[in-house]
Image (tube, rainbow, N blue to C red; front, side):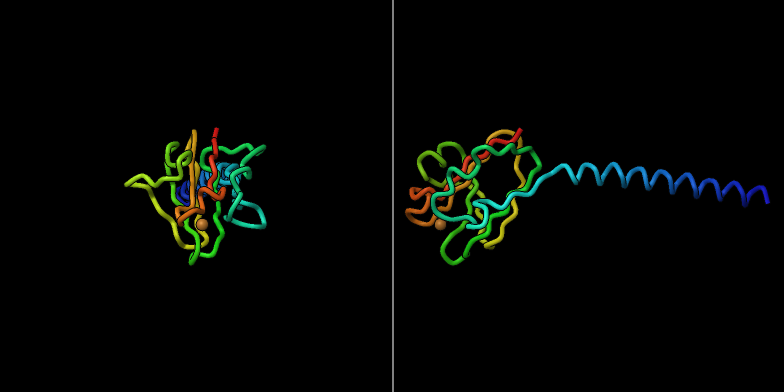
Length: 128
Ligand code: CU
C-alpha cells in the first residue's frame, strides 16, 4: 500500500514537471515570428525596401516564396549585398519555398540570377 501511494505521487510530480516544461517551451516557440519576404508578392524584384519598419529578432524565420526556375536565394555578406556578388562559400537555397532563420545582427540575401539583385532582388535584415 505505502509503496503504491509513493509511486503515484512520483508519477504526479513527473506529470507536473512535464507540463511545466511544455508550457515554457511553447512560450519560447511562440516568441519567434515568421515573415513572408515581399508579402503577397513573394521574393521578387524591388523587394529591397520590404524589411523597412519591421522589428526582426534573432530566431525569426524568413520564408522566401518564388518560382525556383527563375530565382534563388543566396545568403551573402555585406559586400555581396552592396555589389550584388556571390562570395565563394555563400549558402544557396533553391527550393522555391525556403525557410531561413535569422541570426543576431545583419542578414543579407540576394537572388544571384543575372541582373536580378541589381533590380532590387536583395534584402538586408537586422535582427535584434
Ligand atoms: Cu531572381
